[in-house]
Amino acid sequence: MTTKAPTFTQPLQSVVALEGSAATFEAHISGFPVPEVNWFRDGQVLSAATLPGVQISFSDGRARLVIPTVTEANSGRYTVQATNGSGQATSTAELLVTAATAPPNFSQRLQSMTARQGSQVRLDVRVTGIPTPVVKFYRDGVEIKSSPDFKISQEGDLYSLIIAEAYPEDSGTYSVNATNSVGRATSTAELLIQGEEEAVPAKKTKTIVSTAQISQTRQARIEKKTEAHFDARSLTSVEMMIEGATTQQLPHKAPPRMPPRPTSKSPTPTTAAKAQMARQQSPSPVRQSPSPVRHVRAPTPSPVR
Image (cartoon, rainbow, N blue to C red; front, top):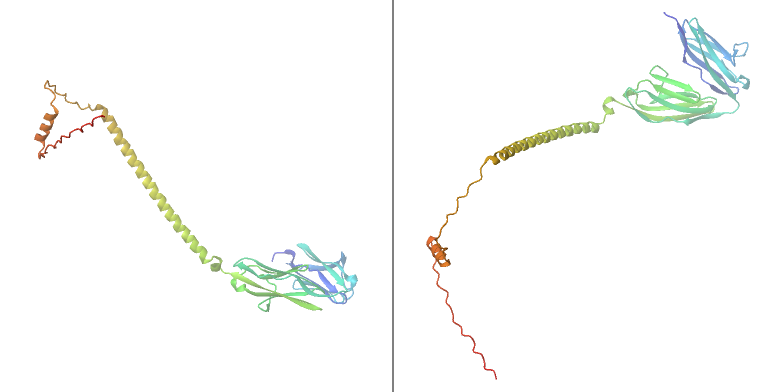
């Protein structure tokens, strides 16, 4: 097996402890060969000689430091160092010892959310309390243990549950319990993971189909208009050719010649003669009786006196 430098799969977390209670630091370390582990406080090596009653252990990659009864003098920066032939790694956290107590309190609660299948999901809470609360995550009442699929992490008062790749069966009611020596608090939320079929609503599919049909209809209309346009242009061109041909032939035609009027020395027929000729040419002459002429006498002027 090849050698591997030490790495922290779970680093140290800061601790707030009530004076007189126990304080525990824990880290998970990997590496080959198995690394050698040492602890420090404010840069000074820790051992049973320098810190009476301290308990230090390293087994199966888990390094622990336990102070059974803490005092204010134990406050400071604690560091764990892992070393092997391939390298070295360190992790540091704070220990704060206080005489006050406070029950757990959520400054940031769980939030219900919806996510798509295959995406990463992160559930965060912020918890305060003195002593530092013990925080656990649950799904539908069953405790979730940290694993490659469900990772639980802590950064100060921020606790997170990270689902690397969510699936519909991960949907459910998630809760966080925070407990210390003086109290307990709980936060609950719903998580819904949508499958691939649920990710695209049916209404959106219908809209896509309608859009395709509209595009086809518009394309057909454009083609018809284009054909009609070319037909109209062709017809206009033919008409222009015919008109041009006619215009070119017209100048070659001679104007019609009018026969000359015959000259006659006979006198112009009178009106009576024209009437007589009209009666002879008419197929159905109509006889007209002459209008009676009345002879009216003029009034006799009266004598002037």
